[in-house]
Length: 74
Image (cartoon, rainbow, N blue to C red; front, top):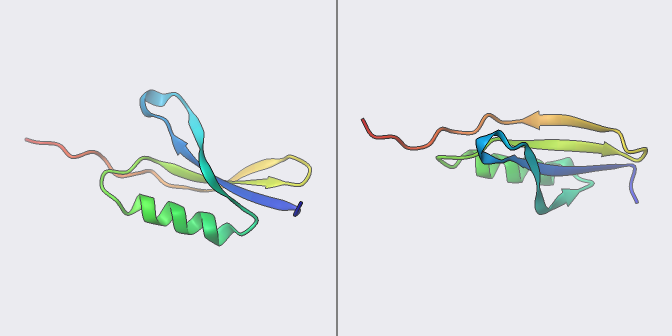
């Protein structure tokens, strides 16, 4: 196992917290950056974040997006 792993989490609706996105985990941060950038560019989009996990188990959020609001009608 490599010393550092990255994974992507998605904000659950209704402020229920964050959930890990299935299969989006890598030792390469660029892989997770690409996923987050692609999904954040959609409209509407949920908030996403990239979490770094060190070999000793410490975690740190390295990137977080705010998401884009939902479509509304006036």
